[in-house]
Amino acid sequence: MAFAADSPHRPTALAEINVTPLVDVMLVLLIIFMIATPVLTRSVPLELPQARDAQPPPPKVDPLRIHLRADGSALWNGAPLSMPLVDALLRAEAQRSPQPALEIESHPESRYDMVTALLASARNAGFSRIGFVDPS
Image (cartoon, rainbow, N blue to C red; front, side, top):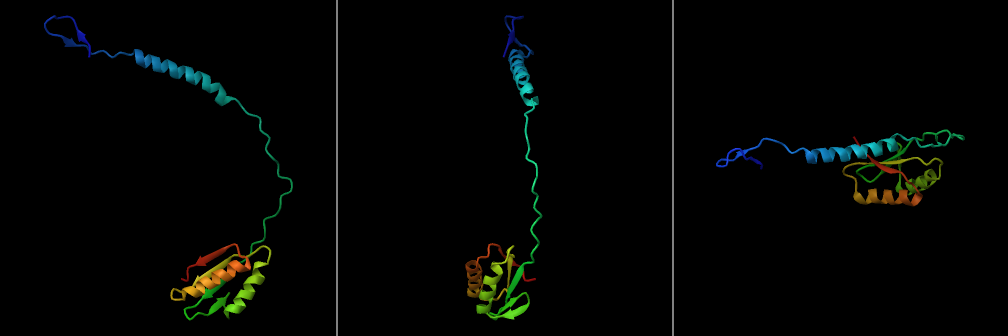
């Protein structure tokens, strides 16, 4: 803190701000912006690729839905099936192109081993998109 030398017995505080550091910082910022601005406004030549052979999107395939009931039976898109027949149908459907998604809808009280067996069958058949659906 700076003190005035008006009175030798009682010093008083000066109410001045030293602006020299502020001016130094402002000059450094001004130089930085003067150097950086031309770099930011310079354009870069860029050649974007053009679409030549646009392929149509793949046809939409309805997903397959398997519903596992609480008693252990399965429904394939609403039709009742046995588990060995489900395995054969999964293998046939996995070979289709494009491959449909498999939706598994399990009753809350269905057995866990039935769900894991169905997941293993779908994986062994070659399904890549398997999802669980809420039974409500």
